[in-house]
Length: 144
Length: 144
Length: 144
Image 1 (cartoon, each protein chain N blue to C red):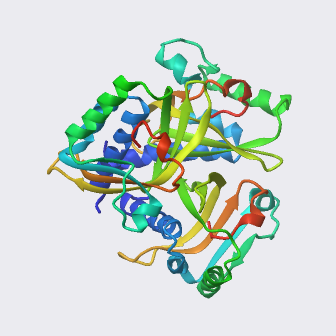
Image 2 (cartoon, rainbow over the protein chains, first blue to last red):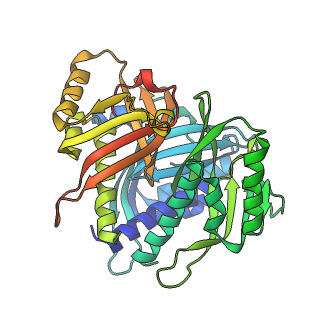
């Protein structure tokens, strides 16, 4: 991979994470191509090849619907994420409105990225979020 | 941003973090320009535009004073930090002298960096440390 | 350091971490030169210049023996690591088979890397893993 390409991809990763951590969830679907796929699964299910997903969407419209539901449902306690990502490995700290912080999730992003030609902004064709622990799933509200 | 510039900035970030984590706090003011500003605040205050700061300094001399006070006051228990930074997001582990480690703080650096011309080492004109949780403030001794 | 070289080194770091986190421990010795040295020690011992190590090996064969022992001994509970690395600082989350995750270790890699000429893959001549806490040692099974 050449340096310019690597910079463009790192830039995509950084903007993705900041959109979520800054609570600009409406920007989130725009990181995917129109028919982009987003899936959260556990390492255990992923390694067994099981199609089970905690979250699954296969279009930008589905991602937008999910954000819309999150905004209106208000079923979850006020919280934020803080991602740290290195070499596609991630750790996410979750900060509750009360100030309580915990190491909420860790895992790996498996991405297929469309480069969109000269100078175009890369987008995800597929982002599979493989979380390490099977204990996290019922708590997931905000995307990872 | 071109690749050489990005490398220079990443290098600044890395050296900053290692100076703190290695307890070379006397090197810390040198990462700022003479009239550089350093501020730690919470996400809550930052988003409301409140000028409240946990730590505030607007010159290298004030930073040096702070380090000097830390060295002589000895009011805090022996501790170290370990930073992990990605895309300006950070997580800091605090390690006490006893060996106890906790995820101490997470947040984001908002930086204004002076490039100092051809081959010069970049320096911070301003570094605002926005910490995610409002629970952390009273415990802060070492800079973030 | 030029951009191509930095990319090659970052690539080594990334592949190293993924080999361990993906439980491909048999690939681990191959990141070292034949007479490569691998050592885990605590910050406390390191700073005092003490030669004490939690793990010490000075050849690829010793690393392979260690992996072999791990595979056959089965004395440790099923677990995985997830590394996040930035500027040679690391944090490792340990995920138990039960799903329990903890921030297991933090520290710094001190590396001597052989570049292996034009286009060759860099390898470690020495990797010293300096862990921050002295409380971690008795629990170490998988390499860091």
